[in-house]
Length: 119
Image (tube, rainbow, N blue to C red; front, side, top):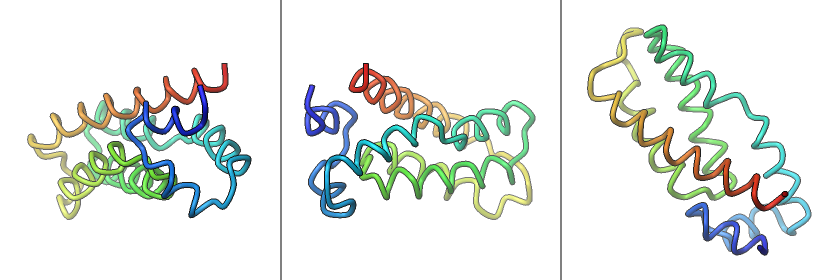
């Protein structure tokens, strides 16, 4: 699989990422770093303990990282989750749970695809 095929498989925008990061070697470096990024784990933990502030911070970070790497689908779903968790006084509203499940699905696709690329 090429890096461009990897981006297509994870519903990303290869050309946008390449224009931002300038070369494929640097893109690969940031893809490897993404595999270690704790943002999704923070969201998951926050939902388990019903901590809306922690969930918001994790979703906001994941949104930014995925946008910078041009992971289009994950960026969109994490953005929706972020906005749903914004200004909730630490609570997790009911409408955030299906959005969390969408982020989880999109995140898994990205992680599995990147892992396959480097395998």
